[in-house]
Image 1 (cartoon, one colour):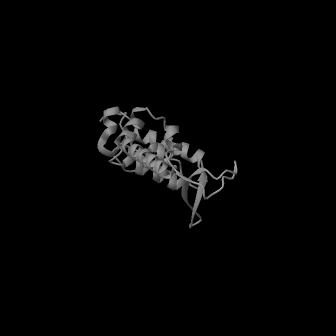
Image 2 (cartoon, rainbow, N blue to C red; image 1 turned 135 degrees about the horizontal axis):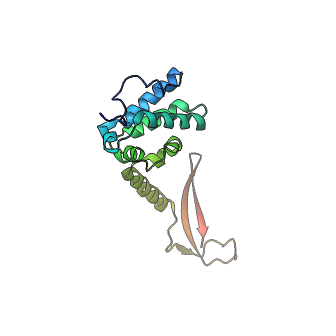
Image 3 (spheres, rainbow, N blue to C red; image 1 turned 60 degrees about the horizontal axis):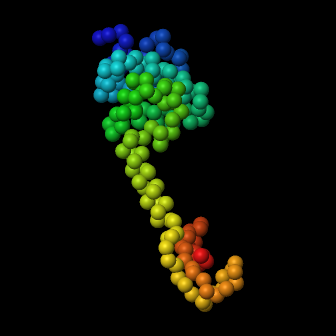
Length: 170
């Protein structure tokens, strides 16, 4: 095995140990996540060194959420549906400082990002008022021009679990 490869598992190398058992365990788990599917061999990456740097950046940029942020990185790096994230980290396309601060949306796979985009667009379309038509009536008086020959659209909204229906003049 080449010296640039990290060890296949086990205790953390003494030169990377922080002296804090929680931090050391987090580094070990991050290194194991980077070694998922043995991708690291393709890139000749030192997973323990990379994990130690990621953990250090997480520690510097996180307050009370340290463990949650580490767990999030581990699960995203190990995710079989998102091998691109791990490969980009191993290849250096994503800086280690950056992976430490990325949001869940940023770490998501391209497939999940596309699905979120589609769902967002559908939600926007469902909540937008129709651009065509409306109902023409002379029963209601326009609030702006005070005429009775107006076109209205009915709008349905939910505010604090109370459904409301109103008319909007066009």
